[in-house]
Length: 285
Length: 285
Image (cartoon, rainbow over all chains, first blue to last red; front, top):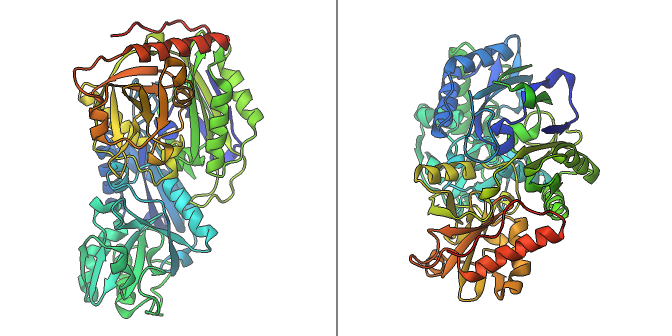
């Protein structure tokens, strides 16, 4: 027997099996990507990451269903974002996946604000630690309540993002972004084992930093090392590369030339992929 | 634009706003309780805990809606369980709760197996730590993927439950239960700050242990202390008090007389509340 009392919007309401384990147990994974000109940016990498995340939790899903979901929502969207959610499906009550049929695939797309890309952000620390012992730290699961609360703390402090340390006191990530620090010509970002998510933009930076004259590595970072760095930025699929205030040493430039160069290279790669963005790499500041 | 591809059961499918933050971000809380003779066991305590959990995350919900949801699903259920879920509601994309209306209230009830109450369980350790720095550790949020994975590990090892340590290496709880250890005539259970949830049966044991001739306290417990204990049991609203093998010293009785006495007292309290259960306290073993 089921009772549901929800304010529902006709446009976004569909018949839904309320025993879905995504809703009841956060038993699922998701991905968010940028959409430019009706196409998903870095689509192959996003879909591969989503499938890898699903596999890590033993969730089987036919990739053709994910493609159909994406195609079903992005057509005609000039600029914005697409989110694809894959849950284990609906089943009997309890933690054990009893009576579960096929995975559930849900996608939605919405217009977005192109000025968010490359825009600088202010970052504040949060006391919520990232639990790097949990598989949910390395994979993009639906269990986002820690990030919701960390983002809420940041907003209450007048900041854009919250920096999470892991349980060992090392940098992990932000509520909805990866973090990089720049010291001299060396970029570092926390390894996945330190509680970082395998962000698509993070992977792009690691693979392409050399084109901006930087070396880049996944390295454990202490708060002290971050606070002595020359600069820091966040990466996410919607912010892309966001110069971050509040992480590196005070008084240093927010966006040194090498970071501007990275942004320009990322725009070049979007254009080369056929996704001409409605924004440019900003000049340094 | 939304695309949903889900195997749906006609009986449990309802029109649902798919922007619900419970589904997308685990941004909600829930409660599970036993139902006996069409009534919810310890209803006041369960509803109070659920309201407290919602409040901890800034989710406003009218208690009358929760009462209506429970009443709507438990009538006529001879024995089983009821689950009430409260999410922040449906809103715009992103972590910040933009454009969110009323909280969503969802309840479901299902017949259960009365032989699960007081039944002994085997417990194995898991490498997944409970993140006691997260508000989600002390409150029953929808972010249950760690428990799903821990329970899965336990099942793969042929056990019933998994014991989670916290990030400091102290006992926290099991995947879906609290844990108590008995040393002499002293019962201890991890404090909420060590990553334990405020279980209703846990609170009952803490308040009533003295009636069984035991002292009871919330105390930090190391794995070594647990391994030297005389006995251990788990508490949950459906298992009630479950003698636990695999936690205390090997070779000790699974259910010493004081634990049997606690079970009898709990049955007495259910009967005094008007909920005559279809099970008895088992004799010691």
